[in-house]
Length: 469
Image 1: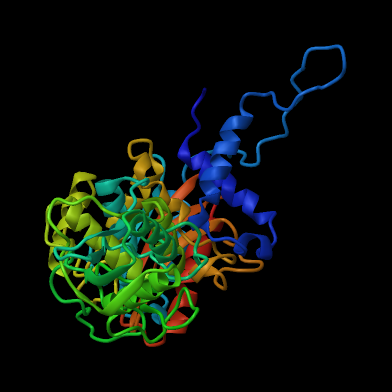
Image 2 (image 1 turned 45 degrees about the vertical axis):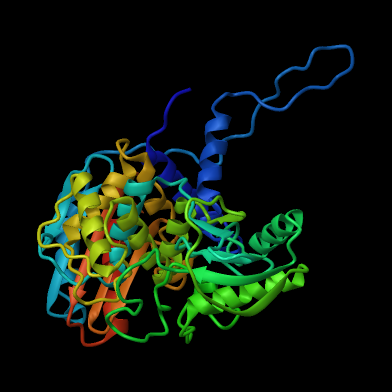
């Protein structure tokens, strides 16, 4: 079977997206793996046959297949390096962008540098650092990796322990709000079944959230954009039905998760005595039951689309665990740095103080971000592909739903991660140029006097990359 280059699939999907209504695009998140399903369907269509002729008295004959949904775009002419310089220079000088700027545009397939200005200067990236977090996690664990939450026998008679593995998709709801993922409901059902099979109907419940180390609070302190970071948290510590965005979080997500699990056991005929308390599993015991997270690819896509800080911090710690580092802020930063270095990108001046970008001590360059995006688009690292498929689509999904929308030349063609802190605004992603080339870009700014005006300036820069021939 012939191979198709990643840029063809990405570019084709972007053009195909223009034909969809906004409702159709936003009805399901990219973490449901729609991009990958479409790519598989595209590959299946290459056979040139499909369906069957069921006419009586004859052998089934191949019927013509429908055209592939994702059509590749052939690049035309040279990459627009000279033209980009003339267009981006004046836009980058906009005072609304603040006093410090870093810009990088590269051909995502060849890695050819098309435009740079301050591209090597390490700046605070805000949430665009999630591109680095995602790349490191995928490099460390692979896109199919799933995080386990287990129930094991405890050290005492009649005791069981709920053991957190750090699954950020874990939910106590009957129906997962974001597709397949770790389910306390399913885990309780399996645990009750195992206990009844062992003629046990009364237990005490402990919980173990010691997989992570260091402080559970982010250095910025209490913040509605992030729950305390523990290895056992259901529904991101949200007290309501929200699945994204800021909301006041639980002060004790591990304890709340254990109490929710105890209630689910009681609903299934298991008497739980006393209140759940911290405990350790009995050594060398097999789990009574296990539930698995959404595959890592899906977690990455959800994180990037919604700019989910809870998932970001969890993935940074999973990277630390896979790298033999302590699973706290410091160990995670070390692990992310090492994994990115293994990809061969320029890390000069970089610092990863957290996984989410809420910490102003994070430092990356525009060149690093475009380097990672190019790695994700190239043939050498297919495990990084979810970094591209998870990026919000301009005018359609996630944090770009209302940006570069409508008649903008970037609508439907541009996919990018946003970054916003007070005085810090950034945008990094990919776009299909008029030449048919897939370009990677990153724009980092600091000290902007007005955040809204800075965002508009960034959107103009991205639209210019999308429209410059």
